[in-house]
Length: 416
Image (tube, rainbow, N blue to C red; front, side, top):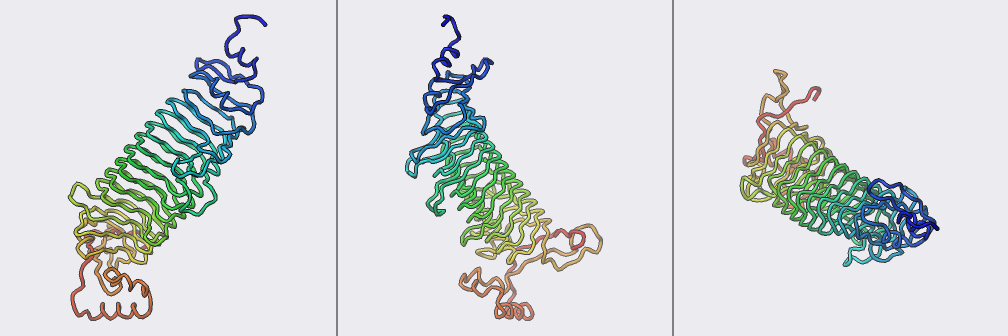
């Protein structure tokens, strides 16, 4: 053999590696081989590894900035041990391959793909039979895009998260699909963007804890106990999402606690136990702006609790909710700002045709809301007996009912 060959060709002759130099070298197809870790270890920084088609044994670790491209023909099977692929570096890319068979240890966070580094990219990866789908652990500015995650066939409480971020800042989670997982969890992880993702069959669609300033946009969540839960995470933008069928007791479409300075805009919340719940803000800087959303077919449209109000609820549409607004105390909701909302139970007219009702929309606590003070009475909701009591109280009230809210400019849509 002639001397002076390029290192890549010498390795190919040894039958151990396929890579392309980051400087623009051509990708070299390797001979078949079952040891993916050896191929990864032999790929230089900046190289592109294109393994031959086939199923490879995991777990494997990527510890230098390389690209592993399965070209849609590679499967990495963890065999039920640990995390199948771990990225322990910065600037690596994992793309176009399938990952399956993680371990089952919750303590170790056994995952399909685990990222322990910054500026990596995981894209177009099929993850199946994984306890945790994707884990980003103390990793910043990573991109997780276009992946498909399916968890283990376990009861929902025993599954791991489809996605878990812990102490991870500035990551982009975009265009992924999650099925048969527990939650998408963001803990101590500020400034992330979560957009265009789809989730079915989980517990919490998304769960933010001490993770401020996230942008949550255009996600589609269905068949979960709760859609999006935000705890101690101010400054979120929750825009253009669709949350459907969050029906479990104690759950709901959107839930905020001690998480003000947030914008909830242009979302569609349908067929949930509660459309949106929020506690009263401790001060005016912690208010929510709830604008341009559609709340439809929910058991309760909005639920506010606490000693006072202060949130801004403007230009929303309330349609066919069993109870439109519920409160823990009558002053809680009335202290909020209600303006320009569409109410399907508005009893006024729009005689001048300007799209605004001639009279304010006012909601009072009649007998139909007795369950707010006495939760046991909810069992009788919509029963003939309670409907009769409600009718009689409205017809001849013994005391003036408490006003729950007042919208001075209710919106009237054409044809309604």
